[in-house]
Amino acid sequence: MAKEPQTPLEDELARQEQEAEVTEQSAEERLVEGELEGLIDDDGALEGSVGSPEADVLAAQVEELEQSLAEAKDQALRAAAEAQNVRRRAEQEAEKARKFALEKFVKELLPVVDSLEKALESMQEDASDVHREGVSMTLKMQLDVLNKFGVESIEPHGEPFDPQVHEAMAMVPNPELDPNTVMDVMQKGYLLNGRLVRPAMVVVSQKVN
Image (cartoon, rainbow, N blue to C red; front, side, top):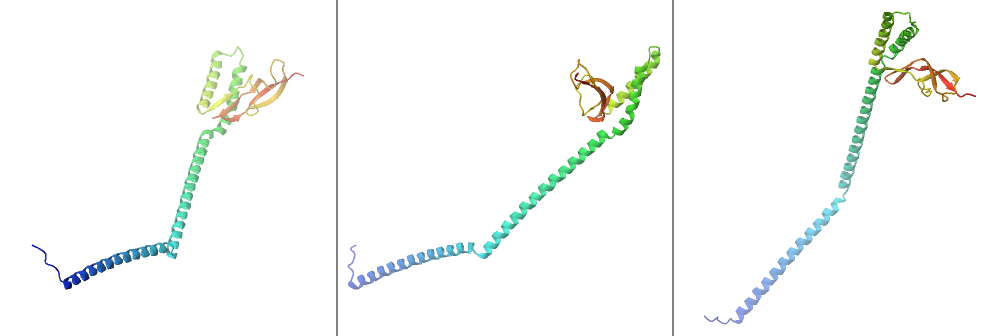
């Protein structure tokens, strides 16, 4: 069916409707642009709020709390280390007391050992075997008990003189030995768990002039 031709009035109405649609579309576009600009302005306001005094105060408080926490952790670590050192020192002192509690007793007992050794050395051939064996067994039992509790003798015959554990009673020229060599032991020394209880009394060789 053929389209009927429009009258001039109808053409004018169509033209006005088209212009109205274009105007409405332009208004909508401007409205959208305005909203976007408003959002951009809102973001700017938010960015400005970050540097506000309230935010600065909060940041300072957070930094102060973090510093206080770090100091508290450091103090806790120091206290734990100090407590560990105190415990270690207490354990060492207790161990030392346990090892050397018998030091005074050992010193009092050593003259008895010396007497038994001298008695055994001074026995003549005419002494009975029973007598000699009794003294020897008594001396051995005495030394075994001392060894059980960490006591050991110092017999440095032929060794270099050591002032830490030896006490020189005399110096005698001897061409057959190097100078400062222990050539005779007058009295044995003793250690208690490695600590000197009594130095060995010795005669030391001297260079011949």
